Image 1 (cartoon, helix red, strand yellow):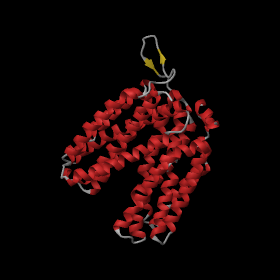
Image 2 (cartoon, rainbow, N blue to C red):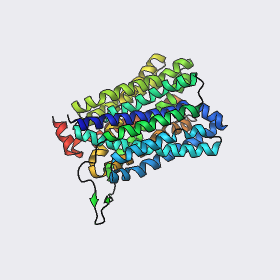
Image 3 (tube, helix red, strand yellow):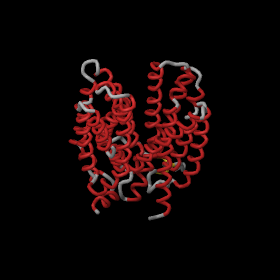
Image 4 (spheres, one colour):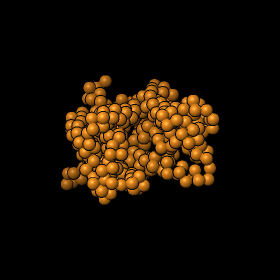
Length: 396
């Protein structure tokens, strides 16, 4: 394998891990930041919408920019923006400055999310085999690393601004050091006008991409439900002790990460359609078991199976979007990632109101239905819709 391509793969892992680490460090320090800004939990909930809005805006803006200038240029700049922005919440002294800080952090996160996924598609195209799930696993590993580092610095009584400042400097260093290894734009992705600068002809987003985006919204809605409601399910429905209830999310996150480390091999062996169809089906069975179980061990097992089933689904959608058209790969990824991110935010928000009319465990049949739809429509990621290079790989 070409050393240049291997270096690009390592750099992609670095940026995914960095993104997970940066966002994880923000999450770890939410209580301290909330206290410093002097705001309530309710106010923080509203401010988090600015984080989501910034991310969505950054994703939609970065897609076309990445297609025009190449991920080799946009990824390091996005990583630098996200790294520098992570310190801003630690500096916030009131609700207004925290809101502005979260908006900028969201923009940086959205820019990095789309640009690094576009580069991941380029690396995957060069390797001619699935790699996307492993890159997403690196993001999860970055979050785990953030929890460990954050726990240590908090035990040393470091203030959020001190820790996040150090994290920002480290992130800027990683962004700069990994940049030279990124791949150059492949092929003639741009047209050059008489004046010289590269320009990209605007393309209308195909309906196929919007269909992938709709599936991403549903699957990431499921992830959002697990993130925010799994522990509350065990605590409130099954009356589990707080420490035991926390294991619900832990089991989900663990199998999600492990599944992503294995999903690329499964996709290469059986194809992305089979992975999405069977993964979503397994996820639906796991969450159904968790929702209906009267026993804590079975509920924990159900959440673990739910994570394992979902683990490889979203990467297949991102990969399918990126390989649909190499000339607009980043724009297509931005559509899928953007709607998927909205699903991640919407999942927890939708479950809350539903609990007013039905028990919490029964509300989980909404994400179960999303998994069933994903399984039934898995053919949308069929390799015949993707780049010729991956077609050849799938045939091997």
